[in-house]
Amino acid sequence: MRGSSTGDSSRSNWRREALRKLVEDPVLFSRLVLGFKPFKYQEELLRDEGKRIIVCAGRQVGKSTTIAAKAIHYASTNPDTVTLIVSATLRQSMLLFQKVLNFIDSSILRSSLERRTKTLVKFMNGSEIIVLPCGRGHTLRGYSANLIILDEAAFMPEEVIANVILPMIAATDGSCWMVSTPWDMDHIFYRIWAGEYGGWSRYYWPSRLSPLISEEFLEEQRRLIGEERFMVEYEANFLEERSSFFPMKLLRRCVEDYEPRIEENAIYGYDPGGRESLAALVGVKFDHGVGRWRLTFYRAERCESYTEFNSFILDLHRRARMDRLIVDETGIGGPIVEHLKELGLPVIGVKLTERVKEEVLGRLKLMLERGEIILPNDPQLLNHLNCIQYERNWRGGFRFSRRNGAHDDLAYALALAVYYPSESFLI
Image (cartoon, rainbow, N blue to C red; front, side, top):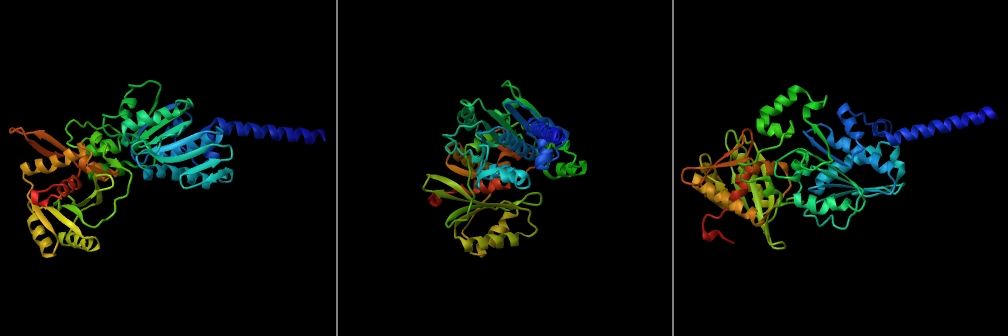
Protein backbone atom coordinates (compact mmCIF):
# COMPACT_ATOMS: atom_id res chain seq x y z
CA MET A 1 0.00 0.00 0.00
CA ARG A 2 2.84 2.36 0.85
CA GLY A 3 4.37 1.83 -2.60
CA SER A 4 1.03 2.54 -4.28
CA SER A 5 0.55 5.69 -2.25
CA THR A 6 4.07 6.84 -3.08
CA GLY A 7 3.43 6.17 -6.80
CA ASP A 8 0.14 8.11 -6.76
CA SER A 9 1.85 11.02 -5.03
CA SER A 10 4.66 10.97 -7.55
CA ARG A 11 2.24 11.00 -10.48
CA SER A 12 0.26 13.80 -8.86
CA ASN A 13 3.41 15.86 -8.40
CA TRP A 14 4.40 15.18 -12.00
CA ARG A 15 1.00 16.38 -13.25
CA ARG A 16 1.19 19.53 -11.15
CA GLU A 17 4.69 20.25 -12.46
CA ALA A 18 3.63 19.63 -16.06
CA LEU A 19 0.62 21.92 -15.61
CA ARG A 20 2.80 24.60 -14.01
CA LYS A 21 5.15 24.51 -17.00
CA LEU A 22 2.25 24.84 -19.45
CA VAL A 23 0.92 27.83 -17.52
CA GLU A 24 4.31 29.51 -17.26
CA ASP A 25 5.65 28.76 -20.73
CA PRO A 26 3.53 29.87 -23.73
CA VAL A 27 5.96 28.16 -26.11
CA LEU A 28 5.44 24.79 -24.45
CA PHE A 29 1.69 25.49 -24.35
CA SER A 30 1.72 26.27 -28.08
CA ARG A 31 3.56 23.08 -28.95
CA LEU A 32 1.78 20.61 -26.68
CA VAL A 33 -1.72 22.05 -26.49
CA LEU A 34 -2.19 23.95 -29.77
CA GLY A 35 0.10 21.92 -32.00
CA PHE A 36 1.89 25.11 -33.11
CA LYS A 37 5.67 24.88 -33.45
CA PRO A 38 6.94 28.45 -33.44
CA PHE A 39 10.20 29.64 -34.94
CA LYS A 40 12.81 31.27 -32.68
CA TYR A 41 11.64 34.82 -33.41
CA GLN A 42 8.06 33.79 -32.59
CA GLU A 43 9.15 32.14 -29.35
CA GLU A 44 10.63 35.43 -28.15
CA LEU A 45 7.29 37.18 -28.61
CA LEU A 46 5.32 34.34 -27.04
CA ARG A 47 7.44 34.53 -23.89
CA ASP A 48 7.27 38.32 -23.60
CA GLU A 49 5.39 39.14 -20.37
CA GLY A 50 5.31 42.89 -21.02
CA LYS A 51 2.01 44.75 -20.95
CA ARG A 52 2.85 46.86 -23.99
CA ILE A 53 3.95 45.02 -27.12
CA ILE A 54 4.25 46.32 -30.69
CA VAL A 55 5.07 44.16 -33.71
CA CYS A 56 5.99 45.78 -37.02
CA ALA A 57 5.91 42.96 -39.55
CA GLY A 58 5.98 42.13 -43.23
CA ARG A 59 3.56 39.88 -45.06
CA GLN A 60 3.29 36.14 -44.37
CA VAL A 61 5.71 36.14 -41.44
CA GLY A 62 3.28 34.50 -39.01
CA LYS A 63 2.34 37.49 -36.87
CA SER A 64 -1.38 36.62 -36.67
CA THR A 65 -0.71 32.96 -35.88
CA THR A 66 1.70 33.89 -33.09
CA ILE A 67 -0.66 36.47 -31.59
CA ALA A 68 -3.59 34.02 -31.76
CA ALA A 69 -1.59 31.41 -29.81
CA LYS A 70 -0.45 34.02 -27.28
CA ALA A 71 -4.03 35.26 -26.81
CA ILE A 72 -5.33 31.75 -26.16
CA HIS A 73 -2.58 31.10 -23.63
CA TYR A 74 -3.42 34.38 -21.88
CA ALA A 75 -7.17 33.63 -21.70
CA SER A 76 -6.60 30.02 -20.62
CA THR A 77 -4.22 30.87 -17.81
CA ASN A 78 -5.81 34.11 -16.55
CA PRO A 79 -9.34 33.40 -15.25
CA ASP A 80 -12.19 35.91 -15.58
CA THR A 81 -10.38 38.15 -18.06
CA VAL A 82 -11.67 39.88 -21.20
CA THR A 83 -9.55 39.94 -24.36
CA LEU A 84 -10.69 42.16 -27.23
CA ILE A 85 -9.45 41.67 -30.79
CA VAL A 86 -9.96 44.95 -32.65
CA SER A 87 -9.16 46.00 -36.19
CA ALA A 88 -10.31 48.71 -38.59
CA THR A 89 -13.04 46.41 -39.93
CA LEU A 90 -14.89 43.40 -38.60
CA ARG A 91 -13.64 41.41 -41.59
CA GLN A 92 -10.02 42.07 -40.63
CA SER A 93 -10.70 41.30 -36.96
CA MET A 94 -12.38 38.04 -37.95
CA LEU A 95 -9.25 36.83 -39.76
CA LEU A 96 -7.32 36.79 -36.49
CA PHE A 97 -10.31 35.44 -34.57
CA GLN A 98 -10.58 32.58 -37.06
CA LYS A 99 -7.00 31.58 -36.25
CA VAL A 100 -8.00 31.53 -32.57
CA LEU A 101 -10.96 29.28 -33.38
CA ASN A 102 -8.86 26.98 -35.55
CA PHE A 103 -6.38 26.46 -32.71
CA ILE A 104 -9.18 25.75 -30.23
CA ASP A 105 -11.05 23.38 -32.55
CA SER A 106 -7.95 21.28 -33.22
CA SER A 107 -6.92 20.99 -29.55
CA ILE A 108 -8.18 19.67 -26.23
CA LEU A 109 -9.37 23.21 -25.47
CA ARG A 110 -12.53 22.69 -27.52
CA SER A 111 -14.01 20.88 -24.52
CA SER A 112 -13.15 23.77 -22.20
CA LEU A 113 -15.50 26.28 -23.85
CA GLU A 114 -18.58 27.41 -21.98
CA ARG A 115 -19.97 29.52 -24.83
CA ARG A 116 -19.18 30.14 -28.47
CA THR A 117 -20.70 32.55 -31.02
CA LYS A 118 -19.50 34.03 -34.29
CA THR A 119 -17.68 36.82 -32.44
CA LEU A 120 -17.01 35.43 -28.94
CA VAL A 121 -15.56 32.46 -27.11
CA LYS A 122 -15.90 32.01 -23.35
CA PHE A 123 -13.80 29.48 -21.47
CA MET A 124 -14.97 27.58 -18.40
CA ASN A 125 -12.51 29.64 -16.33
CA GLY A 126 -14.66 32.70 -17.08
CA SER A 127 -12.28 34.30 -19.59
CA GLU A 128 -13.61 35.67 -22.88
CA ILE A 129 -12.11 36.52 -26.26
CA ILE A 130 -14.31 38.95 -28.19
CA VAL A 131 -13.83 40.28 -31.71
CA LEU A 132 -14.90 43.82 -32.67
CA PRO A 133 -14.44 46.37 -35.47
CA CYS A 134 -13.14 49.74 -34.34
CA GLY A 135 -15.18 51.82 -36.81
CA ARG A 136 -15.33 55.38 -35.50
CA GLY A 137 -15.16 54.08 -31.92
CA HIS A 138 -18.92 53.83 -31.30
CA THR A 139 -18.95 50.01 -31.31
CA LEU A 140 -16.26 49.92 -28.61
CA ARG A 141 -17.66 52.29 -26.03
CA GLY A 142 -18.77 50.65 -22.81
CA TYR A 143 -16.22 47.84 -22.95
CA SER A 144 -13.56 47.29 -20.31
CA ALA A 145 -10.76 44.84 -21.07
CA ASN A 146 -7.77 43.13 -19.53
CA LEU A 147 -6.08 42.69 -22.92
CA ILE A 148 -6.62 44.51 -26.19
CA ILE A 149 -5.09 43.25 -29.43
CA LEU A 150 -4.98 45.81 -32.24
CA ASP A 151 -4.60 43.91 -35.51
CA GLU A 152 -3.30 45.97 -38.47
CA ALA A 153 -3.14 48.92 -36.09
CA ALA A 154 -1.44 51.19 -38.65
CA PHE A 155 -4.71 51.26 -40.63
CA MET A 156 -6.94 52.20 -37.69
CA PRO A 157 -7.95 55.81 -36.95
CA GLU A 158 -5.48 57.29 -34.48
CA GLU A 159 -8.16 59.14 -32.53
CA VAL A 160 -10.01 55.86 -31.88
CA ILE A 161 -6.84 54.17 -30.60
CA ALA A 162 -5.89 57.09 -28.35
CA ASN A 163 -9.29 58.26 -27.14
CA VAL A 164 -11.41 55.09 -27.06
CA ILE A 165 -9.31 51.92 -27.07
CA LEU A 166 -6.41 52.65 -24.73
CA PRO A 167 -8.69 54.07 -21.98
CA MET A 168 -10.50 50.70 -21.94
CA ILE A 169 -7.59 49.10 -20.08
CA ALA A 170 -7.09 51.95 -17.60
CA ALA A 171 -9.29 50.53 -14.83
CA THR A 172 -7.96 46.98 -15.23
CA ASP A 173 -4.28 47.92 -15.52
CA GLY A 174 -4.53 45.85 -18.66
CA SER A 175 -2.27 45.00 -21.59
CA CYS A 176 -2.16 46.20 -25.19
CA TRP A 177 -0.56 44.43 -28.15
CA MET A 178 -0.29 46.31 -31.44
CA VAL A 179 0.43 44.26 -34.54
CA SER A 180 0.62 45.62 -38.09
CA THR A 181 2.33 45.91 -41.39
CA PRO A 182 3.56 49.51 -41.44
CA TRP A 183 2.29 52.39 -43.50
CA ASP A 184 2.86 56.11 -43.02
CA MET A 185 4.75 57.97 -40.31
CA ASP A 186 1.90 60.30 -39.37
CA HIS A 187 0.26 57.82 -36.99
CA ILE A 188 0.44 56.62 -33.39
CA PHE A 189 1.64 53.18 -34.52
CA TYR A 190 4.77 54.73 -36.01
CA ARG A 191 5.37 57.01 -33.02
CA ILE A 192 5.19 54.09 -30.60
CA TRP A 193 7.48 52.09 -32.88
CA ALA A 194 9.91 55.01 -33.07
CA GLY A 195 10.16 55.08 -29.26
CA GLU A 196 8.22 58.27 -28.52
CA TYR A 197 6.28 56.38 -25.83
CA GLY A 198 8.28 54.40 -23.28
CA GLY A 199 7.58 50.94 -21.92
CA TRP A 200 6.84 49.12 -25.18
CA SER A 201 8.52 45.86 -26.25
CA ARG A 202 9.27 46.25 -29.97
CA TYR A 203 9.56 43.46 -32.52
CA TYR A 204 10.67 43.91 -36.12
CA TRP A 205 9.69 41.03 -38.39
CA PRO A 206 10.52 41.53 -42.08
CA SER A 207 9.19 38.75 -44.29
CA ARG A 208 12.68 37.35 -44.91
CA LEU A 209 12.75 36.34 -41.25
CA SER A 210 10.46 33.40 -41.98
CA PRO A 211 12.20 30.18 -43.10
CA LEU A 212 9.08 29.42 -45.14
CA ILE A 213 9.62 32.38 -47.50
CA SER A 214 12.26 31.90 -50.17
CA GLU A 215 14.57 34.57 -51.57
CA GLU A 216 13.23 33.70 -55.03
CA PHE A 217 9.68 34.54 -53.93
CA LEU A 218 10.76 37.85 -52.43
CA GLU A 219 12.67 38.84 -55.56
CA GLU A 220 9.63 37.97 -57.65
CA GLN A 221 7.45 40.18 -55.46
CA ARG A 222 9.99 43.00 -55.67
CA ARG A 223 9.73 42.92 -59.47
CA LEU A 224 5.94 42.61 -59.48
CA ILE A 225 4.98 45.37 -57.05
CA GLY A 226 7.97 47.73 -57.27
CA GLU A 227 10.74 48.63 -54.85
CA GLU A 228 8.85 51.14 -52.74
CA ARG A 229 5.79 49.01 -52.07
CA PHE A 230 8.04 45.98 -51.53
CA MET A 231 9.95 47.86 -48.82
CA VAL A 232 6.69 48.56 -47.00
CA GLU A 233 4.92 45.21 -47.37
CA TYR A 234 7.83 42.78 -47.13
CA GLU A 235 10.68 44.70 -45.49
CA ALA A 236 8.26 46.35 -43.03
CA ASN A 237 9.66 49.85 -43.60
CA PHE A 238 7.54 52.93 -43.06
CA LEU A 239 6.57 55.11 -46.00
CA GLU A 240 7.46 58.76 -46.40
CA GLU A 241 4.23 60.48 -47.48
CA ARG A 242 5.27 64.07 -47.93
CA SER A 243 4.47 64.00 -51.66
CA SER A 244 1.31 61.84 -51.54
CA PHE A 245 -1.75 63.69 -52.85
CA PHE A 246 -4.07 61.41 -50.85
CA PRO A 247 -2.17 60.74 -47.60
CA MET A 248 -3.27 57.85 -45.42
CA LYS A 249 -4.25 60.23 -42.62
CA LEU A 250 -6.86 61.68 -44.97
CA LEU A 251 -8.04 58.31 -46.27
CA ARG A 252 -8.41 56.77 -42.80
CA ARG A 253 -11.01 59.40 -41.89
CA CYS A 254 -13.23 58.24 -44.76
CA VAL A 255 -12.91 54.47 -44.32
CA GLU A 256 -15.81 52.47 -42.88
CA ASP A 257 -16.52 48.79 -42.35
CA TYR A 258 -18.91 47.73 -45.09
CA GLU A 259 -19.10 45.54 -48.19
CA PRO A 260 -19.73 47.50 -51.41
CA ARG A 261 -22.76 46.25 -53.36
CA ILE A 262 -24.04 46.98 -56.85
CA GLU A 263 -26.90 49.50 -56.81
CA GLU A 264 -29.31 51.01 -59.31
CA ASN A 265 -28.63 54.53 -60.62
CA ALA A 266 -25.05 54.66 -59.40
CA ILE A 267 -22.50 56.85 -61.17
CA TYR A 268 -19.45 55.07 -62.54
CA GLY A 269 -15.95 56.16 -63.44
CA TYR A 270 -13.94 54.11 -65.93
CA ASP A 271 -10.18 54.36 -66.43
CA PRO A 272 -9.29 52.06 -69.35
CA GLY A 273 -5.62 52.05 -68.30
CA GLY A 274 -3.03 51.01 -70.88
CA ARG A 275 -0.20 48.61 -71.58
CA GLU A 276 1.37 49.01 -68.10
CA SER A 277 -1.86 49.88 -66.31
CA LEU A 278 -5.09 48.22 -65.24
CA ALA A 279 -8.60 48.75 -66.49
CA ALA A 280 -10.53 50.10 -63.51
CA LEU A 281 -14.22 50.71 -62.85
CA VAL A 282 -15.62 52.40 -59.73
CA GLY A 283 -19.26 53.14 -58.83
CA VAL A 284 -20.58 55.66 -56.30
CA LYS A 285 -24.04 56.63 -55.10
CA PHE A 286 -25.36 59.25 -52.70
CA ASP A 287 -26.52 57.65 -49.46
CA HIS A 288 -29.41 59.80 -48.23
CA GLY A 289 -29.40 57.99 -44.89
CA VAL A 290 -26.01 59.42 -43.93
CA GLY A 291 -25.89 62.39 -46.31
CA ARG A 292 -22.67 61.24 -48.00
CA TRP A 293 -21.50 59.53 -51.15
CA ARG A 294 -20.64 55.87 -50.79
CA LEU A 295 -18.42 53.72 -53.00
CA THR A 296 -20.68 50.91 -54.22
CA PHE A 297 -18.47 48.96 -56.62
CA TYR A 298 -14.85 48.69 -57.74
CA ARG A 299 -12.84 46.42 -59.97
CA ALA A 300 -9.37 46.63 -61.48
CA GLU A 301 -7.71 44.07 -63.71
CA ARG A 302 -5.20 43.72 -66.50
CA CYS A 303 -7.04 43.57 -69.83
CA GLU A 304 -6.11 41.60 -72.89
CA SER A 305 -9.20 42.87 -74.68
CA TYR A 306 -11.07 46.07 -73.91
CA THR A 307 -14.02 44.66 -75.82
CA GLU A 308 -14.38 42.07 -73.05
CA PHE A 309 -14.16 44.67 -70.29
CA ASN A 310 -16.72 46.85 -72.10
CA SER A 311 -19.00 43.80 -72.32
CA PHE A 312 -18.58 43.31 -68.58
CA ILE A 313 -19.65 46.93 -68.04
CA LEU A 314 -22.69 46.38 -70.27
CA ASP A 315 -23.69 43.31 -68.24
CA LEU A 316 -23.33 45.35 -65.07
CA HIS A 317 -25.57 48.06 -66.56
CA ARG A 318 -28.20 45.44 -67.40
CA ARG A 319 -28.14 44.13 -63.82
CA ALA A 320 -28.38 47.58 -62.24
CA ARG A 321 -28.93 50.58 -64.50
CA MET A 322 -26.12 53.13 -64.41
CA ASP A 323 -27.00 56.79 -64.06
CA ARG A 324 -23.92 57.69 -66.06
CA LEU A 325 -20.51 56.35 -66.97
CA ILE A 326 -17.67 58.88 -67.02
CA VAL A 327 -14.71 57.61 -69.04
CA ASP A 328 -11.15 58.79 -69.55
CA GLU A 329 -11.05 59.18 -73.32
CA THR A 330 -7.39 60.20 -73.45
CA GLY A 331 -5.33 58.08 -75.87
CA ILE A 332 -6.89 54.64 -76.27
CA GLY A 333 -9.95 55.90 -74.42
CA GLY A 334 -11.37 57.57 -77.54
CA PRO A 335 -12.32 54.38 -79.41
CA ILE A 336 -13.45 52.83 -76.11
CA VAL A 337 -15.89 55.70 -75.52
CA GLU A 338 -17.31 55.25 -79.03
CA HIS A 339 -17.75 51.52 -78.46
CA LEU A 340 -19.51 52.09 -75.14
CA LYS A 341 -21.88 54.58 -76.80
CA GLU A 342 -22.66 52.01 -79.49
CA LEU A 343 -23.55 49.57 -76.70
CA GLY A 344 -26.11 52.09 -75.44
CA LEU A 345 -24.36 53.04 -72.20
CA PRO A 346 -24.84 56.55 -70.71
CA VAL A 347 -21.27 57.63 -71.47
CA ILE A 348 -19.53 60.95 -70.81
CA GLY A 349 -16.00 61.20 -72.14
CA VAL A 350 -13.38 63.29 -70.34
CA LYS A 351 -9.92 64.04 -71.72
CA LEU A 352 -7.48 64.02 -68.80
CA THR A 353 -5.15 66.87 -69.67
CA GLU A 354 -2.92 68.10 -66.84
CA ARG A 355 -5.39 70.89 -66.13
CA VAL A 356 -8.35 68.49 -66.04
CA LYS A 357 -6.38 66.07 -63.83
CA GLU A 358 -6.04 68.91 -61.33
CA GLU A 359 -9.82 69.45 -61.40
CA VAL A 360 -10.70 65.75 -61.23
CA LEU A 361 -8.27 64.78 -58.47
CA GLY A 362 -8.76 68.10 -56.68
CA ARG A 363 -12.52 67.57 -56.46
CA LEU A 364 -12.03 64.09 -55.02
CA LYS A 365 -9.54 65.42 -52.46
CA LEU A 366 -11.95 68.16 -51.42
CA MET A 367 -14.70 65.59 -50.90
CA LEU A 368 -12.36 63.45 -48.79
CA GLU A 369 -11.30 66.47 -46.72
CA ARG A 370 -14.93 67.40 -46.11
CA GLY A 371 -15.88 63.81 -45.25
CA GLU A 372 -18.39 63.72 -48.11
CA ILE A 373 -17.48 60.24 -49.35
CA ILE A 374 -17.27 56.82 -47.64
CA LEU A 375 -14.69 54.22 -48.71
CA PRO A 376 -14.39 50.52 -47.86
CA ASN A 377 -11.25 49.45 -46.04
CA ASP A 378 -9.58 47.62 -48.91
CA PRO A 379 -5.76 47.69 -49.24
CA GLN A 380 -5.86 47.63 -53.05
CA LEU A 381 -8.15 50.64 -53.24
CA LEU A 382 -6.22 52.59 -50.61
CA ASN A 383 -2.90 51.78 -52.30
CA HIS A 384 -4.20 53.08 -55.64
CA LEU A 385 -5.19 56.35 -53.97
CA ASN A 386 -2.18 56.74 -51.73
CA CYS A 387 0.39 56.12 -54.48
CA ILE A 388 -0.51 59.28 -56.41
CA GLN A 389 2.26 61.83 -55.93
CA TYR A 390 2.39 65.49 -56.87
CA GLU A 391 4.75 68.39 -57.31
CA ARG A 392 4.19 72.03 -58.14
CA ASN A 393 4.71 73.11 -61.74
CA TRP A 394 5.93 76.51 -62.91
CA ARG A 395 2.33 77.79 -63.15
CA GLY A 396 1.69 77.00 -59.51
CA GLY A 397 -0.49 74.01 -60.41
CA PHE A 398 0.14 70.33 -59.82
CA ARG A 399 1.98 67.72 -61.82
CA PHE A 400 0.93 64.19 -60.93
CA SER A 401 2.81 60.90 -61.00
CA ARG A 402 2.70 57.62 -59.10
CA ARG A 403 5.16 55.69 -57.02
CA ASN A 404 7.31 53.22 -58.90
CA GLY A 405 5.66 49.83 -59.33
CA ALA A 406 2.29 51.07 -58.04
CA HIS A 407 -1.09 51.31 -59.76
CA ASP A 408 -3.35 54.37 -59.55
CA ASP A 409 -6.16 53.26 -61.87
CA LEU A 410 -8.84 52.85 -59.19
CA ALA A 411 -8.02 56.34 -57.93
CA TYR A 412 -8.65 57.89 -61.34
CA ALA A 413 -11.81 55.83 -61.84
CA LEU A 414 -13.13 57.04 -58.48
CA ALA A 415 -12.16 60.63 -59.26
CA LEU A 416 -14.01 60.41 -62.58
CA ALA A 417 -17.09 59.00 -60.86
CA VAL A 418 -17.41 62.09 -58.65
CA TYR A 419 -16.45 64.59 -61.36
CA TYR A 420 -19.12 66.62 -63.17
CA PRO A 421 -17.97 68.26 -66.42
CA SER A 422 -20.76 70.86 -66.37
CA GLU A 423 -23.66 72.11 -64.26
CA SER A 424 -26.11 70.10 -66.38
CA PHE A 425 -24.80 66.89 -64.87
CA LEU A 426 -25.24 67.88 -61.23
CA ILE A 427 -27.78 65.93 -59.21
